[in-house]
Length: 90
Image (tube, rainbow, N blue to C red; front, side, top):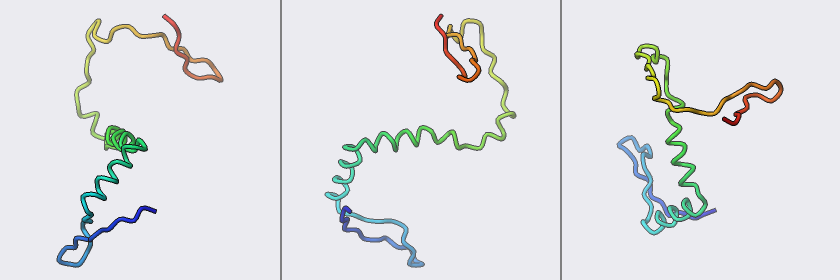
């Protein structure tokens, strides 16, 4: 395991609230995160955070009324038993 020289920052109750590490070690951790693509995973988790939001009050907002031609055309979707939704060709 990676050895990290760390110092704990504590509050007045002696509870650890942060960790301090040397800048060289921080930069090495950043390189490793980027090298293994973990930065993209961390970003995608942040982008998906809205999925965990409380949507219970969503009905309080007015529905959006799409205007003719606003959506453009898409591909037809059919349900095939035993397969599920199948996107067809136009």
